[in-house]
Image 1 (tube, rainbow, N blue to C red):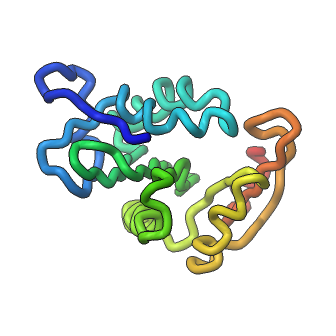
Image 2: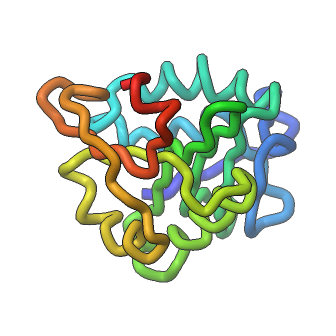
Image 3: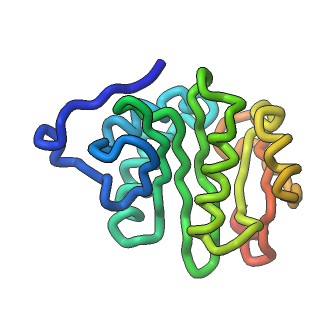
Length: 172
């Protein structure tokens, strides 16, 4: 399922200026259409709505977060969220619409995120269940598994942590 938009005038929550959008020039990125696009991740990350509104949106304003979105025919087809702070460079979220899997959009999102983060080894996590979807791309970029954490985002689920720096080891 893809997510459609209305005109810029009806969206006071426009966050397009804090994002890097590939595709339609007149696309209006809003917190609402990003949340709709990310909704399918809520099974693995139950608090994704709260995290996006209370962490990502303020981070976009202060420059510590960036959204990268591919847009086609005024619909988000893939999206990444990255975080850059003094102690962490992290790719927080990557999602590609299922109908666009396998055409390189995920690789492009990872490259854009790493360029913005100014590192080829960003920190990232993925659930053990979702790792097969990312295994090829992680190997392509040479990401290394540094630790695992049980029940980090969802009770009873193992989260795999990659490229975790020593300063982040005690955070989880």
